[in-house]
Image (cartoon, rainbow over all chains, first blue to last red; front, side):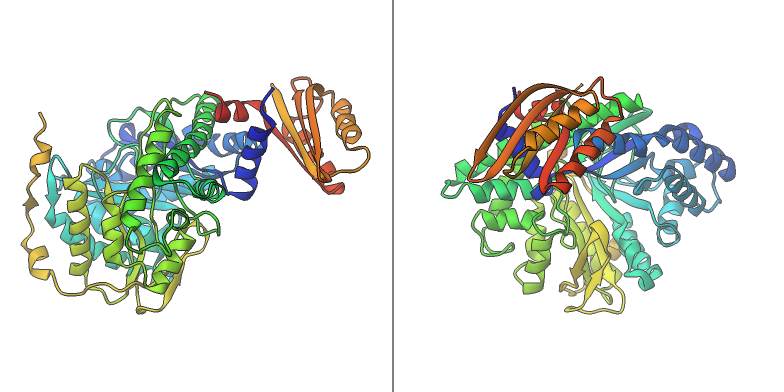
Length: 452
Length: 89
């Protein structure tokens, strides 16, 4: 029979340490829904999504009850909509967003991602119109998430897109200024975007993916922190080993749920994303893990080193626990979604510059950071360019999700509620990069790209 | 399928009887039981075969956790595979 200690450990993890499955995300290809008539395309999209994902929510709820593991979100990711918009030139792409919203409501998912464009080497038909329509699409819908890939290690950075996205982020915040600028919180700008990411707002179903697939993202910062708190006096090698062991257990649970969901929905299993995703709940914070390692507060000198260790140990522990690993896989550091990050940002210990350094060693990038409402678009573009350069040179995914808090200043706060949390407005260096951004063009791919 | 039933709480007379009584009521066969009392805290783990359960699994789990709430105990019923996958390679 099973070991009593193991059973009680699992129950403590779920009951007290916020262990949960963050998301079961169904990726659905919409390529076959392409049509030169936008209304016909929308009709096909609605039909396909509701047909494929009709059972997603009930099946996840059934698994949750049977196994006793909370599954927090059920989501859908779809083919980048710019590819469909390419077929119907002149039509307003917002129609696609409204259709996605309608389908999301019909099947009861929490988010639907894929109002996206991949423009890392330039704009093709559909991309430009889609990017222009993002602010309106995000303002008119509640569940739709948008992402734009503006660079990659292989292609370099599309600086025209970088310039454009600075303006689009501002417009998205302005269009939803009466709702805590929530539009910008549903928009991510990527470098090296993965095609199988189950996490929002950056999830989309890449063109290289199968027709339909189940991807799972786990959570569990609270479990890692609690394990460290229970084992005082370890040296740093011991800390890394403990994180690996804990990550293994967390990921096994993700693998089990992914396999089971895929079997019951008759959809192939794609990947488990080994990310440590925090929530604003106390005890579910990545920052608190770093503090448990011995920092007075997240953002202190030593933070980047601790995060590098955490990120690496999570992958090493997780990779053996799952047959297919993918997505973003690493520690997330979204400021407004992490109680410890929020405190550190409020105290001034954690700055955007420090966060930028941290993004060089963890998954993703500058995530859920609230900036002053009067930050110029060029400065936002400058931040995007810096972050994308880190991703490009280091062969990793980086992303920017900034929320300009329209009408607010440093010291104020934006509260989104739910998993998106609440964040203090953080100070931004506003020395102007306007001339650099206005140059446009393609920033060449680095030597690292020439591996063949 | 087999389920793991865990019962944790302050020790008192009749816990095992109440839980196993409910299992019998719903035609759930107890395969293995282990229990211990440490400083007044009662901890019991049962392995049960629930394939023949007379109601849906979720309902049975809900009934048992309800029994727990009435008696100040924490009762969980979870699929055995969860523990197998987490703790065995």
